[in-house]
Image (cartoon, rainbow, N blue to C red; front, side, top):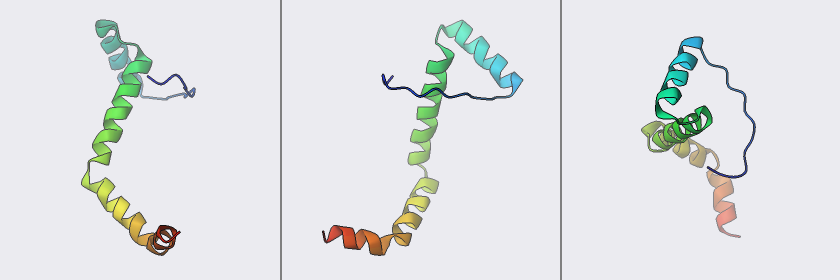
Length: 73
């Protein structure tokens, strides 16, 4: 994990917290490490998804004129 960290407070349903507590108790992994890994995995899956590609195309289309101007610099 990166040395530069940002404190972050997370609220979750009690049932989910209990399941997380059981999981880390069984595996010995820290809650922080588990949540960071799960977040990275979710972001990776999103980046590979068609929804991400749709949003990326939308942004490119929206900013096409500005991007074209930057390309000429």
